[in-house]
Length: 336
Ligand code: KG4
Ligand code: ZN
Image 1 (cartoon, rainbow, N blue to C red):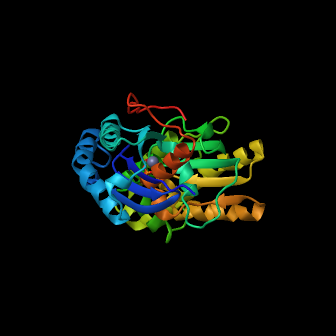
Image 2: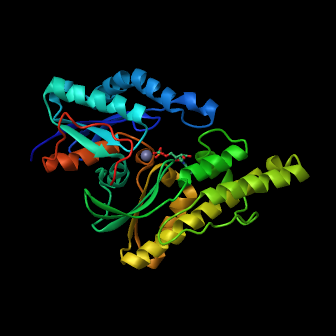
């Protein structure tokens, strides 16, 4: 069989990442995060693009070195076209185009959200989902339920009308004085807290869609009210508050996932995106095995933004000969 070596670049938000894949297996997957944003409590786009600019060459070099592959042996270059921050996407897409020109090998554009879903097909000798399945992509920028009928045939059947679930984690955490991103910290603190101590509201949203902005405001007002009565309220109850926040976010998320399974009759559910690292969400998904669902959770390193997921998506396009022309542009807002 034919062997391909695909180099993939992901730079849609605040992580600069490069991976090298040998067919559907990952040889290397280097991710350089950007500390700089923590002190601003969120991603600053201008600072993100500057950091990508200085990170991209060393990250690519390291990925090639770890894979033990020289540039001359590469078969194709895959990159994230969008969605994401324009300045960030421009760094990765310009670099990928230049490399493909210099090496005279095909260029493959990848949709970031396809990447989060297709990460399940990175070959680690695990069971992979059969089509059709429901992809639930939950990150700092997205909350979507996607009907996946083939590698690149995806239909968004539910989405958030305002904030993403990752933002709900991060902004609630900010109110509690936790640093950015607060999601992983809430997860950790929640493990020792009482999830039913503080009931937070489940916002209403039509059909399979989501809304999180009302939740965020409810947390803010609740904390402000309690702190007025007792300035040490947060300190005294931090674990219970985190557990209650996480419990409610899980409830909001799975209400619509259950509805989507009922509506479509598709009982295979694969989660992806940074928030799928959450231990409570993982446990909740696994519990549906009792109801006869097939559930899929990606390995931890392929949940948050990474280039390996762009590489696997690029690989499936490569097999179809589905390449990009040099006129392809970074696209901050792009349809699935
Ligand atoms: O996919 P990702 O790395 O970047 C985007 O495309 O947005 O997702 C980042 C998001 C952040 O909101 C972060 O707080 C959240 O994923 N996150 C978590 C956990 N790990 C990362 N949220 C809850 N629990 C976690 N363990
Ligand atoms: Zn992402």
